[in-house]
Length: 136
Image (cartoon, rainbow, N blue to C red; front, side):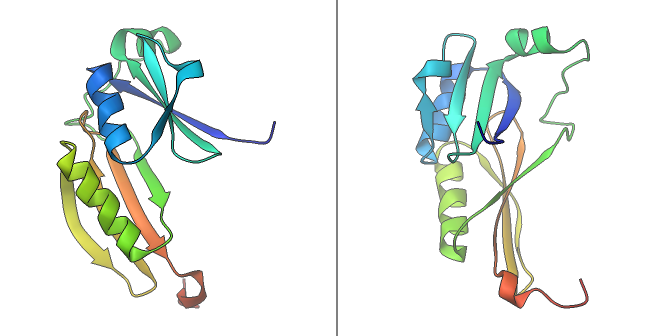
């Protein structure tokens, strides 16, 4: 098995969280989905395990942060175009998420941000690597 990323996030309402991510266009893998958690397929190598807080707590002795007031992680996803960045933000807002910050356009990179239903911070961007400034 090649290396894949499985990001685990605590959620308050599993059904609402699944619906949110499905509305963004991401599928759910039923093999890894039950009443305690669901596997959201972002790509063939990236998965988000959304776990009800009580189940998430079984994996850590640390306190689970309130992601609506505390930043736990910035999740960044690259898209194939600026248009796709805008589309995913529109879908996130329509599904109940928050358009969190103004778009940032660096010329070579275009970035927008949304918060999901549980306040997790998602950075969505398009980057034209051929335009990256040499002084980076």
